[in-house]
Length: 443
Image (cartoon, rainbow, N blue to C red):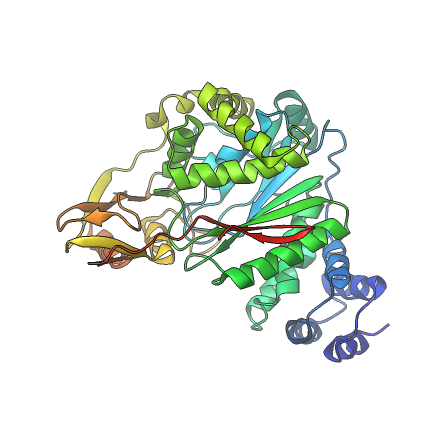
C-alpha cells in the first residue's frame, strides 16, 4: 500500500477502505508519511468529500492513534457534551452538575482555551484549590460517587488529530466538513462516552457562519457517532452575539452560578436546559425531552443542581463556598464602564470583537505560553434589541490595569456595538436539532 495511490484514489472521488484510512493515519502519526503527502490528501478530501462510512473510519483511526479511555468502571450511561466554541460559552459549568443531579453520570475531559477566553479547565481553575488532574482511579471513583468529574485532557488523546489539524491550518483545508467532523468526534470517541450531545454554533461569533453550514457539520458528526455505536444528537445555536453577559474566566463562573441558582440570563439558561435534556434522555433518566426539561428546571429551582456543583468543587479540592459567595472568586482591580454615544436600539453586537477585547485584557491566550488572568474580562449590560440612550453603560471592563491599552479595549468594545434608530428582531437562540433521524428546524 502506498500513500500516493490512496491520494490518487481520493482525488478521483473513489471511496477509501477502513484499512487504507488506517494506513494513512498510522503512517502519518509515525512520520512514515510526510507532510506534503498528507497535505495532498487533505486537499483531495476538501474537494471530493467523504462518505459517512469513510468519515467514521477516519475518525476511528484518529481515535486509535493515542490513548482511549475505557469508562466501563463507571456505572450507567455516560453522557458528554461538546461545543464548537463561542464567546461567553460557559455551558459545561452548568450542564455538568445539572445533568448529574438527574442521575446521569458526566465523566468529562476538557481542554484549555487558545483564543478569546480560557477553556473549561481555565474557568474551573478560577476557583481556589480546584484540581484538574486526577488519576484514572480517582476520576472513576468520583463519578461513581457523585456523578460528575471534569479533568484536563490527556496529553496523548488523538495525537494524529493534533498533527493533522496543525497541517490543515497552514494548507487552507480547515473548512473541510469531513475533516472538521472527524477532528471533533475522534476526541469524543477516545474519551469513552456512551452518548454525545453537540452544540454547533453559527453566526458572526462562530466558525460556521451560516445555518446550512452548521447543519452540514452537525449531520456529519451525528452520522459518525451513530456509525460507531454512540447515541449522538446536535443542536444548532445562534452565536451572532455572546451567550449570556459575561466573557472571562471568573466572571463566567459567577454567571454559571447565577444560572444554577435559577437567576441566570435567559439565553444561557435555555441553551443549558436544551443540551442537558438531550443528555438526560440519552442517559435514560427521562423518556422524552419535555419530561427531561421539566426535571431539569425543577433541579434548578430546588437548589439540587447548585448543591451538586458545590459537591463537585469540594471533591476536586476547590473552595465550595464560592457557590454561595462568588466574591471569593478572583476580582479585577479596575472596573471601567463603556458608555453609548447615541440614542437608539442595539442592532448588532460583534461577538468575535468582544471576545478579542476580553483576550486583550488577559482573559485568553494569544499563544500557548501566555498566562491567563482569571479576574479580567467584559460584562455586557445591553444586548441586541434593547433600547439605549447616549451615556448609558452598555458594557463593563474588568481589568488589572487602567492605561492606554485598556482605553483601546474600551474603544474596541464600543465599536463592537451597532446602535440604530430601528429596533430589529432578535435571532432565535435555538435554530435546529440534528439526530440520526434527520434535521428538524425550529424556525
